[in-house]
Length: 195
Image 1: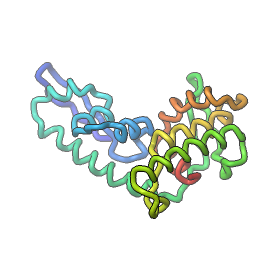
Image 2: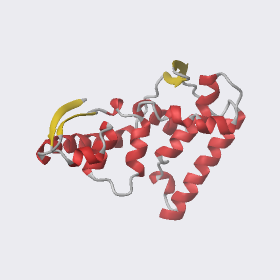
Image 3: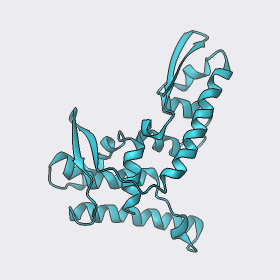
Image 4: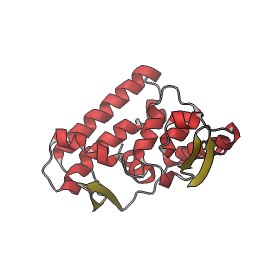
C-alpha cells in the first residue's frame, strides 16, 4: 500500500491505495472494468475509497500523480494475472461476519449440478457477446470473460461449500457480493482456470 496525507482546500485527506494486485479486491477490479469514463481521479477513488469530490479538492495535483503511476503498474500486473497458472489451494470468505475457509476444488463441473448449469449459462452468454462484438474467427484465442461474469461463476461454485447450504440459484447469485471481497489474485485465477 502507498499512503499519503494530502492537503486539500478544506484541510487534509488521508489516501491509501494498493501497489500490488494481492491488495486489490475483485469488487474494486470490477468497478474499474465497468467504469465508462475512467479518469485518474475515479481510479484513485475506487482503489482508495476516497470520494472523487474530496480528491478534486487536493491543493497540489502533482501529489496525485504518484497514485496514477501506481495505477499504471497495477494495470500491467493484471495482464499477467489473466495468464496465471497458480491456483490458490484455499479461499476465505466472510459469511455472516465470520471468516470461512474452504478448499478450492479442482473439478468444478462435479458439484453441485445446479452451480455447473448456471455457470455454464453465464459463460455461454459471455462467449456469445464476445463473438457478436468481435466475430467468430479466433474467438477462443482472444476471449476473456468479464470480471462480473467471473464473480457470478465463483458465487455459484463457492456458495454451497462456504455456507454449507443446499444449492439455491438466487442465494448463490446474491453470494457474489461476498465473492467481490476476495483478493483479485485469489478470485481471478480460480475463475479463469475453469473457463
